[in-house]
Length: 298
Image (cartoon, rainbow, N blue to C red; front, side, top):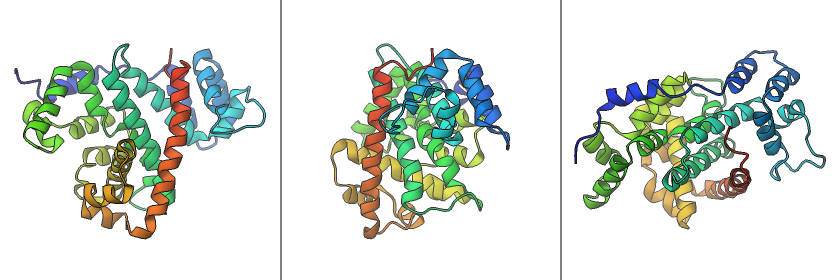
């Protein structure tokens, strides 16, 4: 097989990624202002009928359980919260970017990425991790790092599917770690590529580093806790899909350094099981939106 392009070639591809949906970009810029009002944010959302419909669909989904139908974007902003809105916007963008009419592999990766993002965010509270008062901010970066940790795989699969599948074959044939198989064939691995994509989108440093180091969290330095959290979310989601026991998956698939960073003990297992149940509930909501055609941006 001909060797695929080296990382610099794909960096050039990254530079041609389409920009954010203009209204989403304006919404996120508005939300970054310290005193932005729900009315101002809602006004931007309502200026685009497609985006407004998507936000209102989420606000009216069964997960939020509103007794009365949410009809105005301003009310949806209050209900969802600014951070949740930003996460929704980014999810819309990424999912639409890599969608394909017959892309079953893309769809599977997308579902895995979305569930990891939701799981990582839920784990912050369940494990009582530090909030934004130190060198790490896992509460702020967990969702995006989880959502985007495999975005490098999505990019290769979308543009170079033969190389994506060749790496999987090599991993299985020679019993290699997936990143090593990718580096042999691609000259880089999906974590490096994901970090380059995150940097392209000007995401916070902790998110970029956690994406780069989610297979080796201790190498993330001051952001090791967030990287370990992303690794744990990956392990839990994969175990849930495979029907494996969560305790066994944590013991066998999560490295010792990550377990120590996250202070994972047997007493924490009920919390992990509750997190997985919440992830399943939220994924049913998002999958329902996808089936109804409201998930992708027009």
